[in-house]
Image 1 (tube, rainbow, N blue to C red):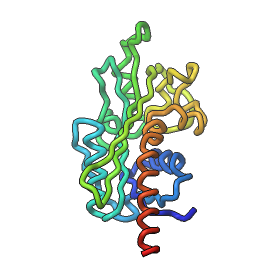
Image 2: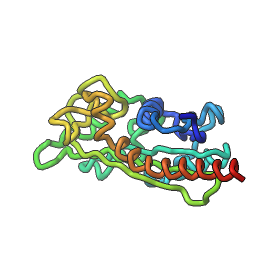
Image 3: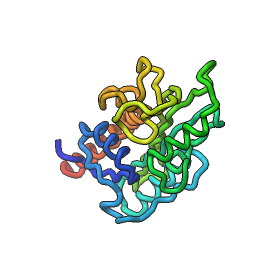
Image 4: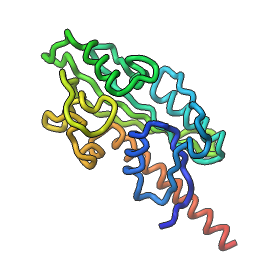
Length: 217
């Protein structure tokens, strides 16, 4: 089926782009990274919550392009660290930190924390926000994945903190040890996308109905 409309993805994270494209590839929409449209512009994300950042990024890209914009703001919350790194997950070690630097910083922060009684419990959270050029409200969906933080990295898949995040539902395996299909089935992003799919399908159907009315008029 031909694309019904274009959705600009308001993220420059290559890992997120790949996962969002894989999770939405069966929908008749054209997914375009925002930098293909707006160049190397940096998007604002100075909110205190994942939702605030996702809404801010989606609304900004929608206003600048006049197109639908889908933003992802996500990260890791570790209970022993009071919910950190949270919205600073990509910058936990320092600004523009690499995944390896962030993972090393997380291990140092949890060095004295034991596994007993859920001491290293954590969760991945993902908030997706869809902004429309014809609506004021931004539609928001969230997904979560519970787990614990390992003491050493495992696996070679995924990105970010995936090598350290042992998934509760994956029989002791880290997120980075899962296949793409396994990860998408249980990950925070996979769950958020499945909720957002319903909104996208509603939007697609509305556009098709509009096109039919115009053509029959």
